[in-house]
Image (cartoon, rainbow, N blue to C red; front, top):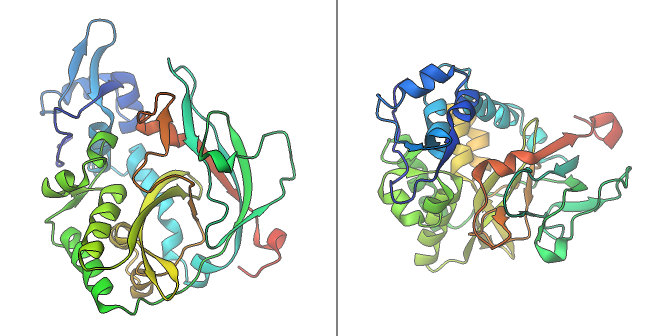
Length: 323
C-alpha cells in the first residue's frame, strides 16, 4: 500500500490507533498493517498496546489505497451518492430521524454537538418514539445519546457577487490542479487551518475556514459552519457561508471537488455547491471552528467519535412528497 498523502505533522500526531483498529479500517490483516511501517507510515511502539498509528494517517492510507474496499473509500462513495441524482432530489423536503450515540470506554465523558433547530431549512418534528430524549439544543452539546426528527428543505440560490464566485473557483482550482490535496486532517491540524493549507492538504473543515478568511479579506461577511452530513452513513461536515441578499448562503468547495472525484460530473451540482442549500446537511449549534465531539474538559474528542451518528430517511410515500 503506497502512502501517497501528507502525514500528520509529528508535533500534532496522536498515536492512539492500534493495529487491530487499523486493520479493520483498511480491510487487511495485522501483518500487512505492521508492514506499513516499512513503507514509512509514522508510528509509535507502546509497551502495552504495541504498534500505534495516527488515526488520520490510517484513514488517508485507506482513502488512497485504490483497492475500493477500505472503509474510507466505501464511506466516501456512500456519502456522495446523493450528488449523482437530479437536482430536485438535492433540494426537496426530506424528513430524517437522526440518532447520536457517543462511544463508551473513554476515561472522560464525551459531549456531542446538537442540531441547530433554528437554522434555515431545518424544521423540528415530533418524535414517534419518545424513548430516546430530544437534544438539549440550548446547551450546544450533550453528554447523553439523543434522537431528533427533522425535516430538511434545500434551496437553490445563484451567488450574484462576482468576488464570491471568484474566491470559490480559486479554492476549487487548488484541488483540481493538485496544489492542495483533499485528505483527512487531524483535529489538532484543523485548528491551524492556514498551516494545513500551506502544507498542501485540506479537508472540509480546513477548506471552509480558509475560504471564509479569503472572503473576509475581500470585505464580505463570511463564516464557517459545522454539522452532520446525513445518509446511509453519518459524518461530520463543514462548509462556508457568505451573507448575500439578507441570508446566509452555503459555499461547499469540498462537495464540488469530491463529487467530481466520485463520478459526479454534473455542472448543475457544481453550481449548486456555490450558494445552494442541500437537504441532507444538518447544521449544529456550535461555533464553526469548534469540534463536533469534545472531552468533558473541553478538548477535542477522538475523530472517530462522530461515527456514532446515524440517520434514517423517511420514504417519499411517508413524507407525502414526490421523489
